[in-house]
Length: 146
Image 1 (cartoon, rainbow, N blue to C red):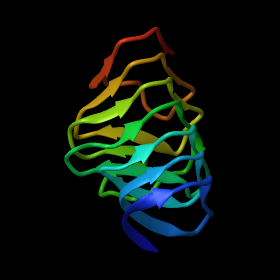
Image 2 (tube, one colour):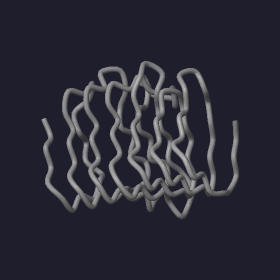
Image 3 (cartoon, rainbow, N blue to C red):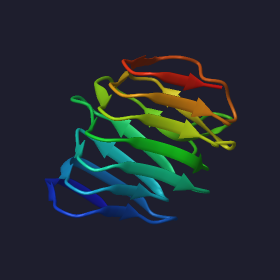
Image 4 (cartoon, one colour):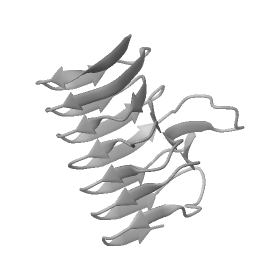
């Protein structure tokens, strides 16, 4: 499924096994990703959660995506992007922003790929993952990295 532009006035769920691309959308509700979502130049006004064995979120395009609340990636198996380990959260262009907290936890089969830039205005938690945090985020809130 590919959607280009528009307002979505409800919660959005990307089910396991789905491969979805959304561009220039404004999601007023929460976002739940159990499959793969490629998101470009969009706004998520609710909380966003990425979780499950095949779950992954790819952020790209300029201007970047804007998460007004929290973004949580927990227990995500990720998607293949050319690395030896899958990617649970891929940031492939600059200007990505999370106003709430960013939580990346328990991702034992996936990594955070930061090829682009992301600003986190709230707190950042990184723990229980396959790889140590390698830096690359601009974080304005509290950090809990273990």
